[in-house]
Amino acid sequence: MSPLVEGFSSLLDPTVLLCIAVGAVLGMLVGAFPGVTATMAVALASGFTLALDPLPGLAVLLTIYVSSNFGDRVPAILVNTPGTPASIATTFDGYAMAKQGRAGLALTASAFASAIGTFAGLLLLMVAAIPLSRLALQFGPAEMFALVVFGLTMMIGVSGGRIVKGLMAGALGLLLGTVGRDPITGDPRFTFGVLELSDGVPFIAAIIGLFGIAEVFDQILTHRADSGVTPITQFGKWFPSRSDWRTMIKPLAVGSGVGGVVGVVPATGGDIAGILAWDQARRASKHPEKFGRGSLEGLTAADTASNATLGGSTTTSLALGIPGDSVMAVMIGSMIVWGIQPGPSLFTNKPELVYSIAGIMIAATLLALGLSLLRMRGVAKLLDLPRHFLWTVILIFCMVGTYAVNNSVFDVGVMLVFGLVGLFLRRFSVPAGPVVLGLLLGKLAESNLRRALEIGGVSNILTSPLAMAILTVSLLALLAPPLRAAWKRRRPAETAAPSR
Image (cartoon, rainbow, N blue to C red; front, side, top):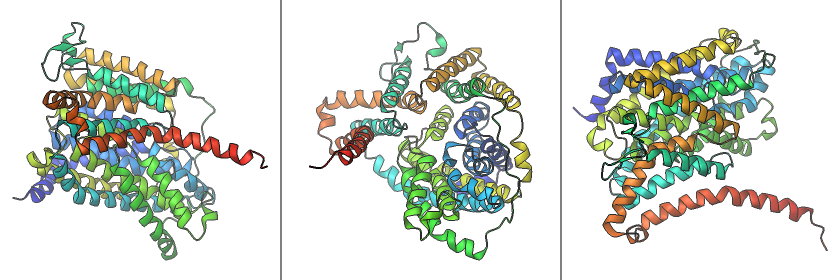
C-alpha cells in the first residue's frame, strides 16, 4: 500500500473522525471568543491529547488550528475585535460591512475565502514538502545549526518592531533550553538536584503557562465591566451573488499567493499575511477608495491570505523541523513527546503520517466551512457571555491538562511559574513566541553547533556556502526592521528641511 493511500485511509478510523469533529467545534468556539488564541487553545488541548495515540491526538490539535481560523472572523466582523491575531485584517472591512447591514454576506464570504485559502496552502504542502525535505536531508551539522538560527531570528525579527525585547525573549528561551541533560555527554545541567528537571523544563507545562495562564491573568487585570461592545445583529443577505463572486476572484488569487509565500517563512503568521494581502489587493483594485470602508475585495484578500499560511507553516514545520508559527511550535512539542521527530527524516520514516496530517487538515477545512455557513445568529449572544465564566473554565482546564501529562504536581507548579513569567512579559511588551522557540530549538541548535565544531572547528561553518548564506539571511532579518525604521525617520526629516 502506498504512503498516500495508507495515510488517507487511516482517517476512516471512527476515533480519528470523532476527534476531528470535536476539534472543529472547539476551534470554532476558541476563535469566536476574543482573547482566546489558537496557540493558547492548542497548548491547553495538548495536555489532554497526549493520553491519546498520535494520530487521534494530532487530529484534535490540527483541527483546532484550522477551525479557529474560521471562528475568529465572527467577532472581527460583528464586534470589530479580532478573535485571534490572524483576523486583524478582517476588521479593516468586515466590521464596516456589518455596520452597512451586510454582516451575513461578510461572514459567508469570509468562510469561503478562508476555505479557499486553506486549500491553496495545503496544495503547497502536498507539492513542496517532499522536495524541501529531500533538500534538507543533505544538510550537515553546520547547515542544520544555521537553519535553526534562521528560525530563531525570524521569530525575533517579526516581533512587532521590538527587536531588542525579542532578542531578550529568545535568549531566555535558549537559557531555559540548557536545563536538563547535556545533549552530547548526557551529564545533568542546571537541574539543582531536582529530579523532575532531568529531561529539561516540562514543555507542555511551560507553554500552557505562557499562553494560557498568562492570558487569563492579563485579562483579569485589564478587564473593565463597562468595556463590552454590543455585537451587530442585523445580518442582511447571506450568500454572495454572481457579481459578488466576480468581485472576489482577483483578491482570492492575490490572497492565496501572498499567504502561501508568507506561510513558508518561519515565524511569520496569518496576521502579517492578511495585512500584506489586503494592501496588495488594494493596489490591484479598480476601486481602492472602498478599502477600509466595507470592501468585499479587501475582506476576501485578507481572509484568504491569513488561512493560506496554514499550509506553508505546516510545510516548514514538517519538512525542516522549524516551527512555521507559534501554534506549530506547540504542535512540534507534542509530536516530540509522542516520539515523532518532525524534520527531513519524517518523510523517510513515516511518510504516511505526512499524508494523514494533510488529510486531517482537508477534513477540518470542509467541516469548519460547513459550520461557518450555518446562520450564526446565536453567535452574537455567545459573545455576550460574562468573561469570568470563561476565565474559570480555562484555569481549571489548564491545571487538569497540565497534571494529566505526567500526573505530576511539579508540572502544575511549573505551569503557574511560567504563567507569572508570561504575565511579566506582557506587562513589558516582550513577545512570548521567541521564548517558546528558544526552549524548543535550543538543544537542537546546541547539539548541531557542537558537532560541527568537533568535525572541523569554526572553519566547518565558515567554509559551508549554504550555512553562511542562511546565517547572512538571518542577520539581515534582524537588521532590516531597525534600518527600515531609521530610514523612515530620516525621510520626513529630509522632506521637512528647507531647500537652499
